[in-house]
Length: 207
Image 1 (spheres, rainbow, N blue to C red):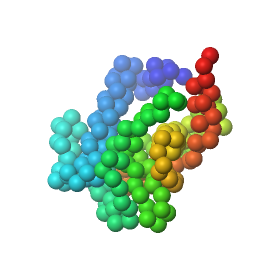
Image 2 (image 1 turned 30 degrees about the horizontal axis):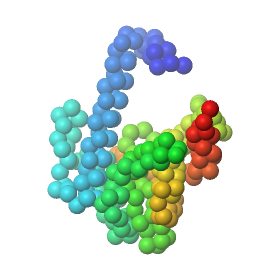
Image 3 (image 1 turned 120 degrees about the vertical axis):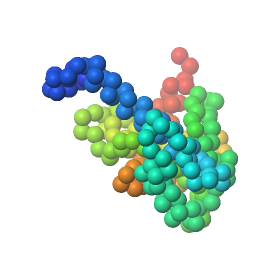
């Protein structure tokens, strides 16, 4: 069902104009985008050693440095930082593969002395779910439900593929970190590199 169709159902149930429902959704989405940008800017500054502990104020968001997502990251990083090392070049790292015709921006790649490998870490705000009983992914991933875990795992699997195909770095598991009022929840990304590579190679074949 389309967004407008869902909006019509909600409007009918709540006896409100459809336009009002859609406007509320769009405002919420915009707030989420701005919040996500500010949180990522804060994380980047912390990892680059440029942070003064202050989050850029934005009156649209109606919050300051005590944003729950910022607090969640800072608490996690205080525990995580002593256990990893990294190069500043691997923060907001732009990567790509010419042959496959794909590219992306890695939030953070951290090295773990414990595993002896690099690990891609991705910071998420907003809604995050582990299951979606209403919808599945498409194509070679149709056996997977369209949860945020699986959608974002595809993203990190792509990043890992690009790095492994274009560098000599040895990578281990990738991690998704959901930052919210509940704190920082760390999820190991599902490794979808094998089917993803096969799919991308098929797409890259000349017609």
